[in-house]
Length: 178
Image 1 (tube, rainbow, N blue to C red):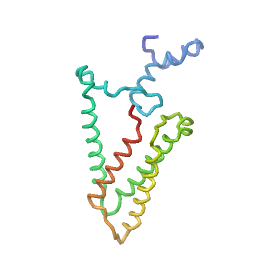
Image 2 (cartoon, rainbow, N blue to C red; image 1 turned 90 degrees about the vertical axis):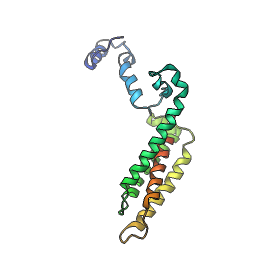
Image 3 (cartoon, rainbow, N blue to C red; image 1 turned 45 degrees about the horizontal axis):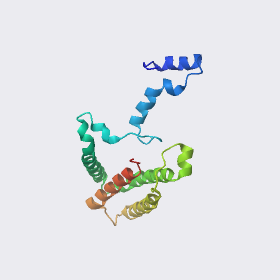
Image 4 (cartoon, helix red, strand yellow; image 1 turned 180 degrees about the horizontal axis):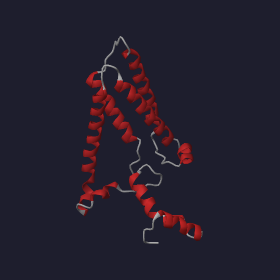
């Protein structure tokens, strides 16, 4: 089935002909899902080939572009945390929730039993990050305790930029890249 049929016609074909494998009918949808959700188990996209539309020779220089993208992501998340920071501890509270969520993702992805059960990609050597994340969340909650009224400790730009950088690095480390 090379031509693209509307989803209703594909379902009707499945009902009429139970011998047709659903993977043959829904191949285009599955392919588009793999390009939009890179965390899917069995994802084998070579991201270096994403820039070959410019020139086929650029594939060997893709690492330069990815380094620039990584620097941009870390700077953007750090500045986002800095903009969120105020005297009320908003950056620490929201960052604790974000880092705790990333910690759950890292723990589930690093556990082969849970990753098989939930059908998500197993990421080896990510278990140590969960320990770091737990300590980091504890430090953020401890900071919030001393930042309540009357505040005794203030974070400042150094603290908020560091929190944003840590969040960006944890998020990039919790994704399997090849």
